[in-house]
Image (tube, rainbow, N blue to C red; front, side, top):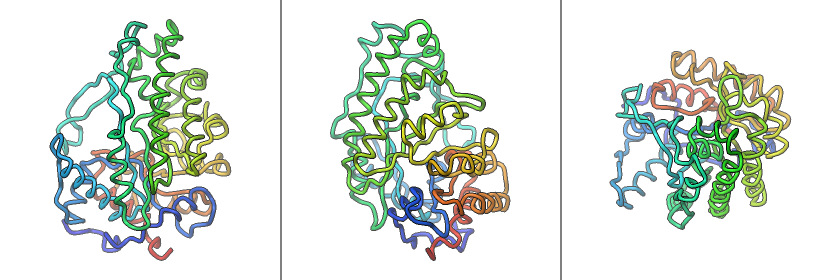
Amino acid sequence: MASPFPNLPLGNARPDAGRFIDAVMGRRPADRPPLVEYLVDEAVRKPIVTGLLGRAWVDPAPGDRAGLEASLENFIAFWRGLGYDFVRYEESLPFVEAERIGPDASQRTGERHWRDTTRGAIASWADLERYPWPSVAAESLANYEYLATHLPEGMGLMACHAGGMYEHLSAIFSYEGLCFALHDQPGLVAAAADRLGQIMLEFYRRLVTLPNLIAVFPGDDMGFRSATLLPPDALRRLILPWHKKFASLAHESGLPYFLHSCGNLAAILDDLIDGVGIDAKHSFENAIMPVREFQARYGERTGVLGGVDIDILARSSPEGIRAEVRRIIDACGPRGRFAIGSGNSIPSYIPVENYLAMVDEARRGTEAR
């Protein structure tokens, strides 16, 4: 697969994680916003790793540590090759959560997994008592440690526990079950949230000790198109206090706390910025609040990450995507505390050429920084 973008110097980037953090935190101006991304689906990464980067893809078998480390080397090579200053990685502890499985709409992979919104593992106090809560062990962070100690010079690690407080709580109860339990058994929900939060806090206590960690960057999707998924007061009682603990732990370790959260969070944005203390917000959808509007309203109080709408990335042409990237950079770049990337992530259905068009346009001129 020959590169359609001759201006994309794959493998020749000069990563500078410190420069990235300084730009997002507003410590120094950047003549061009740095590149950021939350997740890139394997279906998009694989043709880039094997084609553009010329590496052999590795699918490690269970228990094959050598194969797993080879796949992690490919993971590092992808982020470095595309011009990021960091590797972003996440992995979840083995919480018992019901899933629904179906075919992948992009047809690039065999199947996709969704949270079961009607069937959960906890619906009573008896369920809570027998729920197999996982513990945080040394092996829980083995892959994080490998990445942190095998990064190319200049690169950093942005990492988190995969899935946030709200996401795991709603998966353990199921979304429907959680809504009923909030009304019928609020004490049960509070007890489960406390147990979950303590486990995740212990995970973060270990995470922040890793070398080359430059930011804690979790995701916790608390909203949908028009509102938060739970009443704002419920989020303030059950979820945001734990984010504040995670953020405080990061800040005490000298690290920023970034947050990816989808949906309309207008009701709790002040809580996130002023209460939790997030240092930058990620996930923007034009139908809710375009990134340009968010930055105009909140950019003096927090950093802004990404913003290229997923619908545009999925359905526009590479030329249209380039134009959108330029519009966003022209609007958000001069204000500072901004990094350019997708408004959400790069799921499997994003055409590879569209993703590369965004990256290429974002990187124009950055190599001269």
